[in-house]
Amino acid sequence: MRFLIIDDDPEYRQLLRYHLEVEWPDAVVAEHQPRAAGALPDSAEVAAADLVLLGHPLDHEEGFANLGRLRAQRDCAPIIVFAKHGDEFLAVDALKAGAANYFPKAKIKHRRLIDAIAAELSVGAIDPTGELLVDHRALDGTRRRRIVAKLYAGDLSSVYLAEDQMTGEKTALKVLRHVPDKGGGRLFDRFLQEYEVIARVEHPNVVRIFDLGIADDHAYLAMEYLGAGSLAERLNAPLGLERALGYTRQIASALGAIHAAGILHRDLKPANIMFRPDDSLALIDFGLAKQMRLEAAFTGTGQIFGTPYYMSPEQGHAEPTDERSDLYSLGCIVYEMLTGARPFTASTPMGVIYKHANAPRPVLERFAQALQPVLDRMLAVRPAGRYASAAALLTALDAVI
Image 1 (cartoon, one colour):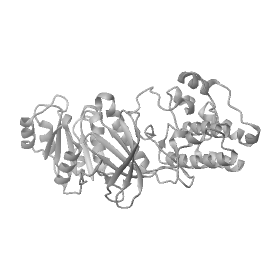
Image 2 (image 1 turned 45 degrees about the vertical axis):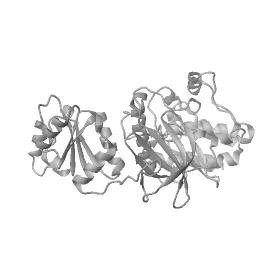
Image 3 (image 1 turned 135 degrees about the vertical axis):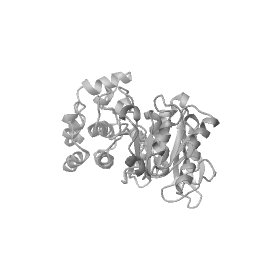
Image 4 (image 1 turned 90 degrees about the vertical axis):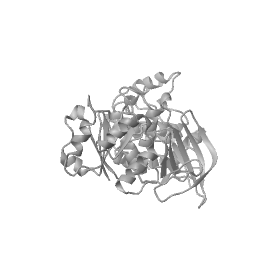
């Protein structure tokens, strides 16, 4: 599937992109911004698309001049118009000018949009079941799940324990409500980004994603249920050197996998490390993950995300981050696993952030002294002093073991 989005509003282009990629993950979506790039795309670019999604108006356009110019191009793909302001009369004008369909921007509904595109291109679309809490598309086929219990509830998101009615398999179902007046618009985008990030990484220490559902004002993730608790629940006392090293290797291996996919976790902490009954662990909650190929559109300039106790100095000061920031966070977790205490504490979050950048590096007890050189590199204040990659850290850990 090949789509071309033409609109001057980058946020609306991103919204349309998500609607398309949620439904057709393998779609190729091109974008064109006339205000910045100049005239409308040429005939070759328009003809290469299976469908064009055209914003209206572009600049100070009168009527549907741009629609007419596109339709006049040879082999023009079908065009769906998205109008900033409009009514049924404008819709009629758009259809008369050659639009295949018409949507007011402010009233776009995912299901109606996808059905319109599917009908226009004669392709398969998700058929909502109306069953239970969520209509969702499975990566491995359609499933219907029954809600068993609520695990977590917040202002904008909730997590439920769900059960597959066919197999009895338990999953965790994360639900995010789209509430723009509470800031939910940006959270909704980041939730969809979370799905894209995790679903493409296959690793035994990264939580598995089974399927995604999206409705008009909700998004859903059905993921592996990790029922043996979190690392945070196990840190009421030191874990011992052998156990801590084993967990560290699994976490480092998972970081290597997500970093190879161009992803930073950016919120690595014990609560985001969950266990299976066989004591293997998996990283979860990539809600703050940042794909390094994306612009910082969702995080904003100079905005701090993460948990101060495990936050690298550069992240705490809203400076650029890379893989070494996640390795710093892992170093904080390693220290806590070995000692039962956090490496840097203070009475305020800013106090903790200050200590990450300025306090002496923590010293391990005698039984773990062999790991001190590794920990010193993981907790180096400047990224250049840390291991360059998770693979390099694993090599150092193997030498200690």
